[in-house]
Length: 187
Ligand SMILES: *[C@@H]1O[C@H](CO)[C@@H](O)[C@H](O)[C@H]1NC(C)=O
Ligand SMILES: *[C@@H]1O[C@H](CO)[C@@H](O)[C@H](O)[C@H]1NC(C)=O
Ligand SMILES: *[C@@H]1O[C@H](CO)[C@@H](O)[C@H](O)[C@H]1NC(C)=O
Image (cartoon, rainbow, N blue to C red; front, side, top):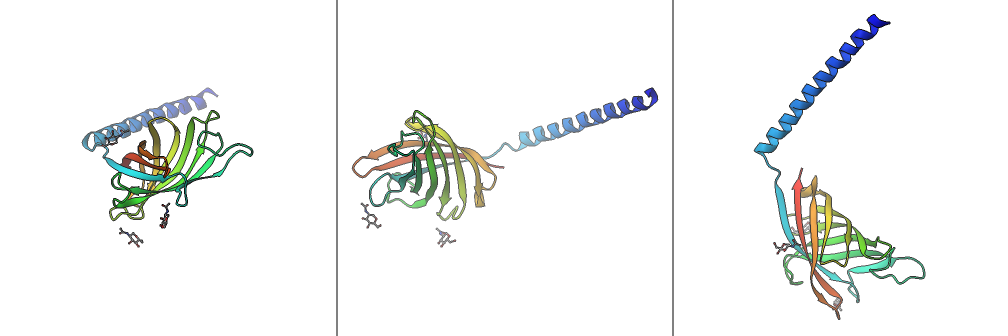
């Protein structure tokens, strides 16, 4: 038994030494390429034009718990959204795209919402490309942060984060203007 198992142990330790060397060289390679090329980040500031009521609503509750009011603060309420996105806070400024997807009130106490939507670009620079936004945030706080979990077209392999801050509310029109800051890396 002994003469057979001894070479096997040797073989294993040679292999693990080789593996260690290999992983060290990969690690060093990664470090050196990182040192010469820091990851590029891209920043954007966009403005969501959100209408929560009226004939041209862009945010509508479509499902919820039976017997409860389908409101932002009621757990289980599902909203679909198709906000238009502009270059400046002015709703008449050039269109950049649309924010299409949904929100679900995801905390039992109603404090958080889970967002899952795409920023679908229609402007010249990024026409047809999308960014995928997902995450949970305290919906009544001034700044809400969500992840950028991916993208398509010019934003393939995108990841990063977004902040959403409501900068104006027109109650009679149920119109909110939300500043959305995007920070992403590609690859
Ligand atoms: C809704 O949209 C239609 C078509 O764009 C427009 O004519 C109408 O004035 C809008 N209504 C409101 C209340 O904004
Ligand atoms: C975006 O693409 C669509 C179809 O691919 C085209 O009809 C539209 O004119 C384009 N918009 C811009 C701003 O280039
Ligand atoms: C978003 O970007 C604008 C413009 O750079 C800046 O003034 C604002 O403070 C940023 N918002 C957040 C929440 O970081």
